[in-house]
Length: 147
Image (cartoon, rainbow, N blue to C red; front, side, top):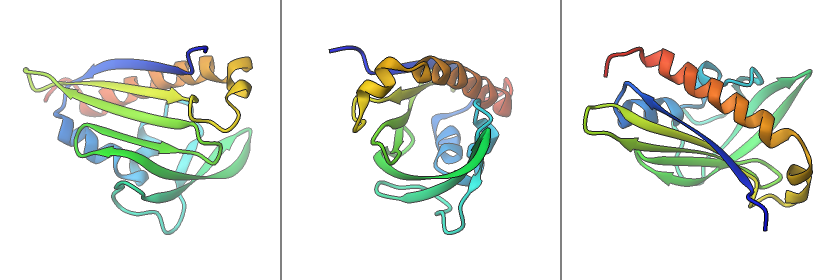
């Protein structure tokens, strides 16, 4: 079976709980989105995500559209993942380091997609990897060099 995920990792100068607070707040997602496609949470989105939370986002890739997400993995201050309608997942894993910084890994995982072959044959994973690297750069810039 082919590998059906891509990941990017970066050390961020902030504690895991501070980073997680940002990731668990859908209104903050446009601040870190490296794809330029995430615009704003839809009305009714929770202020803080938890396991099972559903939230919509206004998006734009060429044309404006809406996407619905559901949080499917959740471990406070360590892990959060949401899935889209097709079942693929966006996952953030936080690993605290001894110096007060955090190793942050973002993963696009299409192993759980309804139609994984679409992603296997498309340039989407490669584009998403570049976007994730930009997201991690933006996350790093938000927290600067101070923990």
